[in-house]
Image 1 (spheres, rainbow over the protein chains, first blue to last red):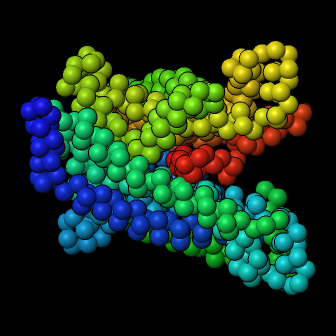
Image 2: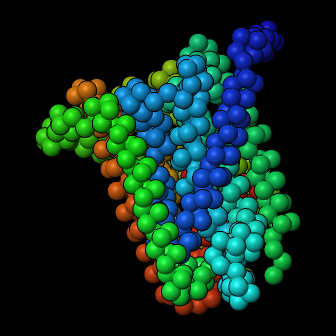
Image 3: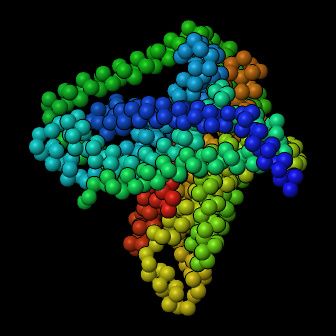
Length: 232
Length: 301
């Protein structure tokens, strides 16, 4: 009895000592900012890849092939060891804010290639007749894309975009490679290092946090994609 | 592919002119971005010859990059094999007739799909190190392999499940009709078909494994990224060696993607019967799979 008491109180002490919720909040912020920028960049890239202009198509394809095949860890290490330390690019005079922004850049740049592919797979769900009809009433590429293709493509792309968002949430832990020291993987490391007897409980707490974060996103995007699916 | 011919007409004279102007503008924008990068490099002296020449010497490759690549490939190869075994066990578990087995398998699969691989790596690293599970030199490799096995195994389990669900119902009905039990039908009739249909998806997953093995950098596994960093520290050209490591990763992964695409395309016409086609699309498309918790494909990134 006393032993389990000891465990519980030790475990409770850990939460007083370390800001676990705060660490998750850092990851959520990283995820939200990166999701926003990745969505913008990814949509532009998808437009490039379906556009009639060869140079833009080529640029979009190269971007996706490069960043989809590079490990996120290398991008993050490059941002801090190369871009920041060697090329002296700083995004904020505040040390921590600078790392945070660099991490957002890395996550956005990496995730944008997956957003682009998701939207392209959404475009593939749009029947040919829609594009043909748009053309036959005289819409040129951009108006057809804006008014006819993309609205349907986004609805078809919700499921893969949801998967991308889930992956982004988990990938936000790699921000520790850039130097964001307040997020979950860094905190997990510190907590385990100093309390190795409780490591299983500590790990399960963090893991559960991610399960709680990720599963609602999955459920929401699945039901959204079902509800918004274009009835055909 | 078809979308490109469909979204716009074959251009007339005016369309061709607009496209040409757009083309020139596009090229200029890309060149402009490249110019900014080049100027950034030049201003910081990153084009100095002695920063790049080390890669022309054999010892940069034999001492650092090739052993690193070898370790990356080793970790990825062990992980994908173990992940396949893990995925088969729990994929079958999710299809089992016993409710308890199904439930336990589902919890295991969904749990490992939701936890970031990096957190698993850090945890297993300390777990193996503190409790002396492996000899100390193998601890980082073991942590990398176990984490990758658990995450990718969970993904493979989903592939197995969706592959079996994508089969025509007649397959199972025929197996039951000739007197096989439900489990026998699963093992001898359904899963083998699902497995051959998921080969391209498995190859794509190998790209994910290769990329994620770079996370071993965080726990000190001597994979390509770590070795590139050591090389950069030795020669004072960290930026260049990271770029070279990235290029190696891109080449390997791109080749894998191409092979996966080829396998996928070859399977489609060769499948012949409707069933095989249905399986391929059910497993291979990035959209189709929606397991019960709604994790989608669990973000196979």
